[in-house]
Image (cartoon, rainbow, N blue to C red):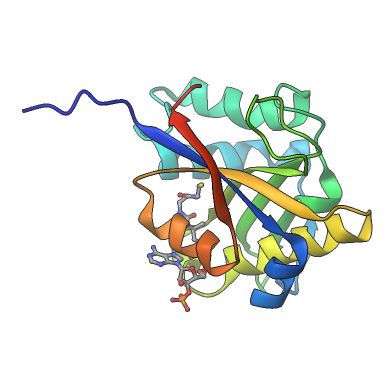
Length: 175
Ligand SMILES: CC(C)(COP(=O)(O)OP(=O)(O)OC[C@H]1O[C@@H](n2cnc3c(N)ncnc32)[C@H](O)[C@@H]1OP(=O)(O)O)[C@@H](O)C(=O)NCCC(=O)NCCS
């Protein structure tokens, strides 16, 4: 029987010091920029297709563009590292806004997207990029990072819990 229950998303937060203590910042980073939209849209489409509402390619592109347009809050380039390998290949990204425009958000910078390219997973990329983002946020006086994760995304939840993120609220997707 089909499960018609709504997908749930969890809002989480962690002190920047906890994230920095738990992971080594990824060594090779540069700030995310609009020129990254094509590969990031493709990677997001692959990662979230059918999951976070990317039912079409156009939706994946629009979501990626919205990082930069202020749709979810002011983009925070300093806390939005693109991680690259020693060979110069993109390995992953963390995209962050100063404050997100949702009701139950923590009063902190908020990660809109955290994604590792499949070939580079389980090598410390996402945890290292979150540590880099936390260090950059701390340097401008911030104390915490927030993010959302789908309730059924066990891998991402393990990642975040390992960095000290705790749940602050949960609700149906789109709320
Ligand atoms: C979730 C995701 C970002 C993790 O990226 P990653 O670079 O592989 O993560 P890391 O290597 O930094 O993982 C650090 C730790 O998190 C936990 N973890 C990460 N991915 C995990 C998984 N799939 N299953 C279980 N634990 C996982 C582990 O404890 C891991 O340490 P270990 O490899 O020593 O066991 C990546 O799988 C991804 O891009 N998924 C698709 C997009 C997505 O779901 N993003 C999150 C949106 S909220």
